[in-house]
Image 1 (cartoon, one colour):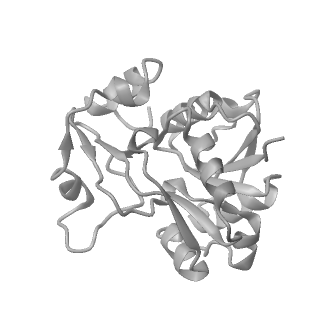
Image 2: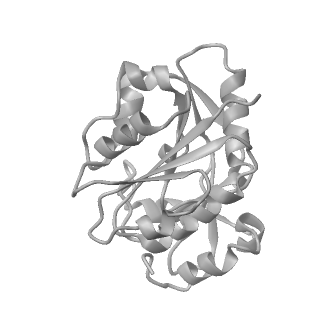
Length: 236
C-alpha cells in the first residue's frame, strides 16, 4: 500500500486562490492523500472546504505567522510524509506522485524533496517564464515527519521555508519537472526579493519561454490562470 501523504496549505484572505488550490488537490492522481487547510483570514474559507474529499479545515484567530500555521497543520496531519503546498501556485495532477516517488527512493531519513525548476506566470502578463535550474522551491517541500520534529518551522511571517532548510540542513533531492509546478506572481507574494536582482519579477522576465498556458495547467484550469494573465484580482 502506498504511504499517506499529508499536504499542508496555509492561507489568509485569498478565496479565489484557495478555490483553485482545492481543484489542484482534488485532481492529484496519487491515491492516498489528505489536505489540511489552516486559515487565519478575516473572511473564512471554510465554506469552500466543507465537503471536499480528504480536506480538513482549521480556523485560527489571526493574524498568525506563516510558520506557526504550518506547524499547526503538520501537528493535525496524519501522514508520515508531509507536503507543503502554497495557496497561490498551480500543482499539476502528477505532482504528488513525483514527490512521493522521489522521497521514497532516498536512502537517508533526513532527505527533503524540492523542485529545482518550474514555470512562472506574472499577473497581467500573457508570457510564461521559466525559472532555470538549481532552486529549492519553498512551495514544493516534501519531507518526513521526523525531519520536522527535529526542528519545526520558525514562527515567522516570511522566509519560513528558507529558515526550515537552514535549521535542518537536510539532504536535498531535487525534481526536475517544470511542467508539474507553476509559480504565480500576483503582487502580494511573501517571496519578495532575489539577491542582486531588481525584483523577483524582473529576474524571471529574463527567461521567457514559448509554452501555451493551457499546456501547463490543462483545459479545466486555463480560464482561471488566463484571468490572472489579464490582470484580474487575485482574490476574486
